[in-house]
Length: 110
Image (cartoon, rainbow, N blue to C red; front, side, top):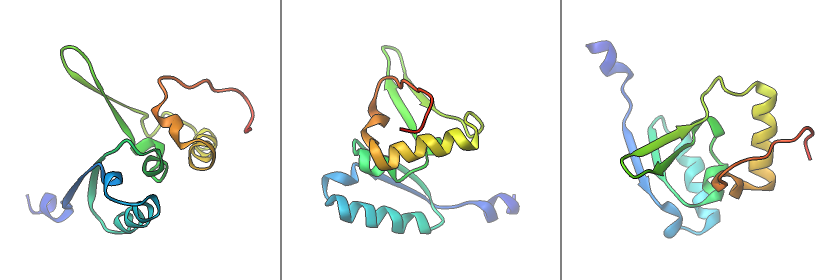
């Protein structure tokens, strides 16, 4: 039992931080929170905040008639190269693509 307590980390829940922070301040605050060893749960509609997070750590909640489904890309779902390519496009080109209903993936990096 003591082993489990030694590995426990506090949980921080943040709801829609983009509503009260300028995008630059939001980025700086999130980068600061990344340095603190906390478990973090954030609800957001901000593509900029999502682009600061690894794709494997993003969980999408979808409301269905009888339940709320959670969807995510597992840690082993993408190869290192695929993860690098997708992360590049999300971080640099189109962070709003994380809110798309589907992705069309084609060969190449542009």
